Length: 152
Ligand code: ZN
Image 1 (tube, helix red, strand yellow):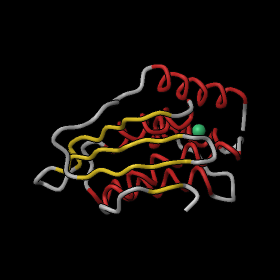
Image 2 (cartoon, helix red, strand yellow):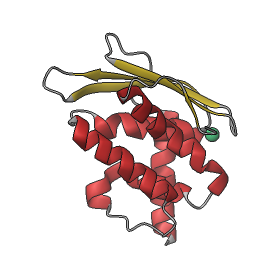
Image 3 (spheres, protein in one colour):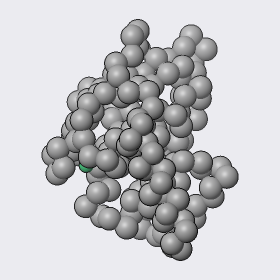
Image 4 (cartoon, protein in one colour):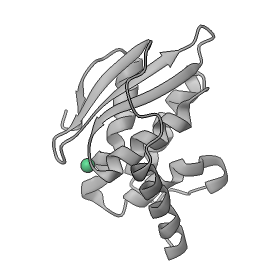
């Protein structure tokens, strides 16, 4: 991966950490779940409001954690808003693939947008669970499955 791309990824992460988007509880909401990453201590609650048309109207997150976990949650809230449930499921799969696939993922900045920054986290294996946390928590919220832990 070239340095310019690394710089771009880092900029995206820093920007979301400094100014997290959609942070705070969401009222009313239709789904929520809590996620905990014991390796780092990241703990977030994700709130989802699903519209009558089946689209995700809004997603917010609340909680505490490191810069990567917070940036990942913030990027998530923007990436899934106004998408259908099926599209959101696809985005969750895509984000987890970017973070955990064995092979270096092909990153298309045009289609991925800020999600691409997650690919930069792969270089720091201990931090991958920080970045996957919000995505696993969103999946759990949509399934009404409650609290999840990255150790589970
Ligand atoms: Zn963390």
